[in-house]
Picture 1 (tube, rainbow, N blue to C red):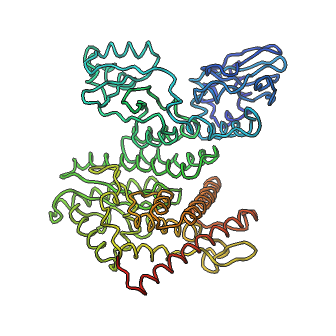
Picture 2: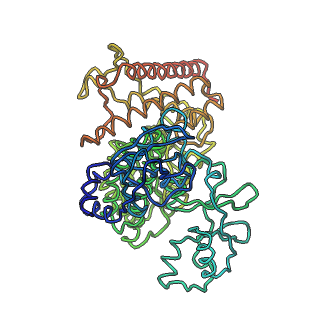
Picture 3: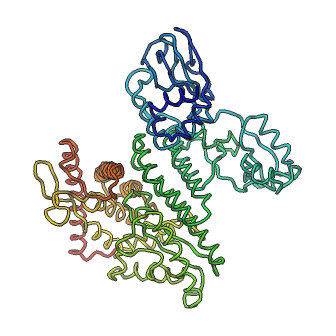
Length: 618
């Protein structure tokens, strides 16, 4: 029977992507279920089942409020959206005729649906099947687009720090939850999860009669009920945790969400990848885990996730792998003589990373800049980490902005002196480098982790000479101006007949946003946030900020789509789009976007000229 089930499943997605061993595992878990015509297989609004069904023969109807919306036949899957999201069933599923079903338990099917092929399958079925009412199902209406307060489904388990672990485990079991929140004097919260119990208590490291404070994580990451699910997902990815207490304005714990509460299909791949990176024991295993990132990006794209969120996830995963490489390098070299901070810069610093993004990095150590032994250790450390980053496939920065280069590896005091010099005298050649990459930087490991460079420099970074330098840099990259029947092309060089969507489209907007944000005193690093802050401060008009934001979103989406297609074809990602492959409407949108960027650049150019004419230095 197992072979018969396996042969049938193999002919249908997502099972067609499984190898024989995986297929036999799924088939071995299948149970045969028969339902006569008219029988209700799944009730609309019912709690999610712990299994899904695959139609073997016959057909079932999707019913919404008594109205038939769709008919599903052999090979179609039922119940997976509800099982994955933990939300009530959207439709009633009724046998349209006598139907034979394979029932697959969650333990067997969930690993299949969280692989890239499974993610694409779920996304396709969600988008193609009708919604309640009319039109396609919108992934944006799923759990990750809702405030997390609406996703809490059970009361939290809360206990005091001196509660015995045995008692806390009993309370968790009775409540059917995977975590207990610990109230700590002073208002902070701790948290103990089922993973803590397995890894520390079940192994005998900590006795069951010890207080929960012995195994809890102190100062637990918490969120307010109004936070959107997809934003919290990014936070969880970034922090490498799986549980988050939801706390109201008075400090009361409303509930605890875990990744299964929050994980819509778009997040499964990133979470599995993040865990693989955290479990890596050496740089080779980190690189092996990182190799799954392009496929994850493709799966998120196929799931219709917004480009800005895909870029955010890409940067978050890159942060995780770099932090793991930093930890491994420190362990191999015997620990740092002094604390050291690692920076990610450029597009990764802005959280706007794509498959072709350069790995701009820097490091700062908190000790004597003149100590040769210290400098030698830092050189070895930077080289060790960057070797691992290179093995992970992150492109090398063509300008040499790397933490294993002397210019970008300094003591904290040396960095402060250099930054002050560059801000005071932006005419220096290195000032342009500092402004273009360091102002986008974030500390991802070591002292200051989670902070941006601009947060440390404000408000000194707003000095007029530096702001004018940023304005001039915002005019350095110009959109293409060669038009031929709505097609924008480069006139010469290796990529003649194509256009560079990064240099000709994305970078001009990034540069304008950086200028506007710094001039406004903003400490944001992301392009959309900088544009919004620039408009709020009057540096940009509301119309110009909106125009640039829309153009950036369009160009970022086209860039991502282009690189996803290249990855499918096994081609290294680049930014050179062939306009002949775009439909006329897309080409027209591009031309309008480039014209809008050019119009803003001309306005900035006129403002610079006016300041110079009047000798303004405010």
